[in-house]
Image 1 (cartoon, rainbow, N blue to C red):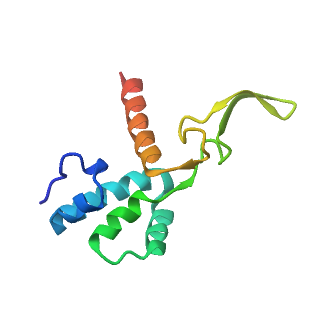
Image 2 (image 1 turned 90 degrees about the vertical axis):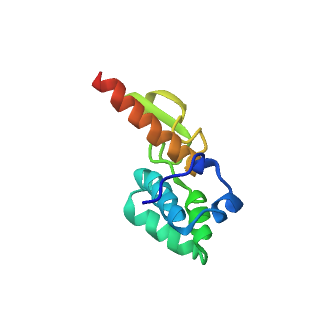
Length: 125
């Protein structure tokens, strides 16, 4: 079974094209899993189909180009929490999950998954 190459998350199109097809499949599965963590199975698969990639490298590039609306701030870019007083939340700040943009890129999804794993491990200690 092929293993993930070092630095596969930061590779570009040319770097992915230089990989063996078996390694490309393993990298695609890992990239798709990162995006599925944020979006779920169905939306990710339909987003990849829409881009209609033809070559194996296009699948890898298509996964890294997927964006979605941030569920934490509901696309506003501002996360609100606390008590609701007169229809307004008592606290607000730029959303850390999407960086205050309201949309999540692949890097935002990757960072969110890693942070969630870190928080779960810290809570279990």
